[in-house]
Length: 230
Image (cartoon, rainbow, N blue to C red; front, top):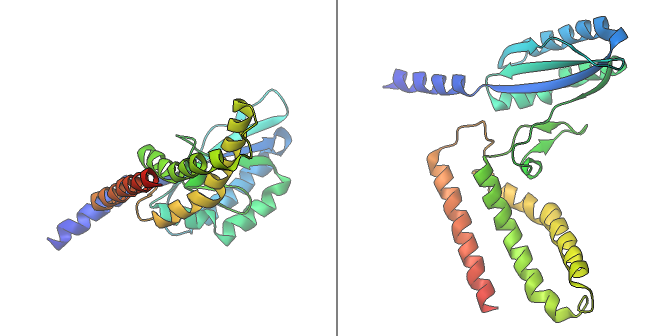
């Protein structure tokens, strides 16, 4: 029984390799230097826990004086991949590559909401993808609903924008709502629901999925009841 559980966990981990796709933009005259630099980078990655494989696609020669290289690095888990991205070795190698690379970036979006559900490094790189789309949508509704209801309840009574045109009033209300949602509310929602907001590439336990959905549903019903009585 124990060996069966171990085998199952091993198969699950093998099924959820995590990969990082990076676009490197290099001047054509520095192609050889880039290849040497990239070799050093991958040698360092190979020494990092969880490394599986690295692939470098054939270069894309652009019409101007640059070449685009697309690299894919595979690790056996999201944790090991994130650890490699944040590692001191990788940061030092990229610092040495600043004279070779004209630019580099990696980013992947599926719903447009991942910015609220993933972290960035100090240099702006995106670590990991957000949760499945249905979790992102439900989380945003959970955070947005009370802000909209508070605005509807309070603004008509303030008279601050009573003389504004409907489009002007809506513009101001949308700006205020969006700012509060992004800066104040969503960080709290993602922190409290962290147990539920697994990245899309990770297999979450069905109990956590059900519990998170119940918490979100009950929270929305509770807020609706409170606003009905205000």
